[in-house]
Length: 419
Image (cartoon, rainbow, N blue to C red):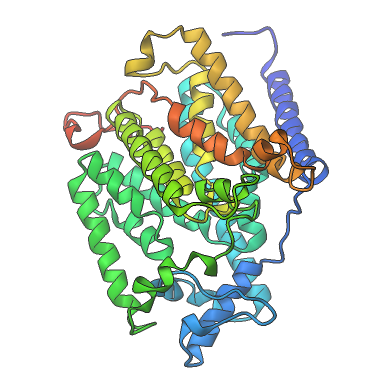
């Protein structure tokens, strides 16, 4: 659609829009949010201390960071992945992990957003100029950088497999296998691969994970992690902490409930697992793999006994899917009969709510307030938002999208859109 404005005027206006979003994101993070941005890379210091402890000849799971109760909680193979953080000074390790994580934010955001921009005819630099600062402003990314966590590495490995599946790469599945070897919870993506009948990729993910388990015996020649330590969730933290936005955390913080019932939690987790994976598979079969993987990631966060806010990366691609629908990409299959305008407005509202909640650190406004139904809802807001996304994130009607084992060999040669 043409306007009377000159190209120079349009670029100037676009620059003003991007600048406004950047300033707005900065204000949300540093002036509105009650949550501090920097946590002195505490988790990185635990990683580094544990790896150096192991290099000195001690059992890695005997490590406890001085003046804390925190030790190493990841699988043995993760020690080998984290070895570079033990070299050089602590400042060097901080710069290295922060830089890698920041680059991955830019790369993954570009990979997800650029096809949406192209589909709607938006200038890429404008779309990314808005999307990248907002991605950095969201609490899962900020918390990952502030604590010195590796969640962005794990998410990038999973998304790399999504791209590999679309392009028919023979190594598809390796990324999910490696992600599972580092943090365990991405194992749910293997189930997703099987549910969407990507048997080769699922087998390769399992094989990769199996190799990493064997490699882990170089770090810890016992089986105590897999038979005992993995199940001791109290080593990670207590679910009453508002930072834990899982179903178990919701139950633990429920007023007057006492210690959370493990039976009730298991029943809820199984229900969410079945419902979430079922929806993820249906989304994939309707042609939207990004939505399917996103719902799988959100489901994993909900059912895990502990899901810190920095684990919740998957709200970011959920927002991209919602924005794409709000911009006019139609929804697929079962939702196609609904009023398109109503669906678009609902998607726009959902994207705005999710982005706003995670950019201003919504839950932390309620942690010190007097207990009431509102504070309970607010303190657990991320759980409710994730449940809403798992239940309601729609599949988009996309062209040239591979789905399961039914991918056509006659697709065009140009690279298909990742979203």
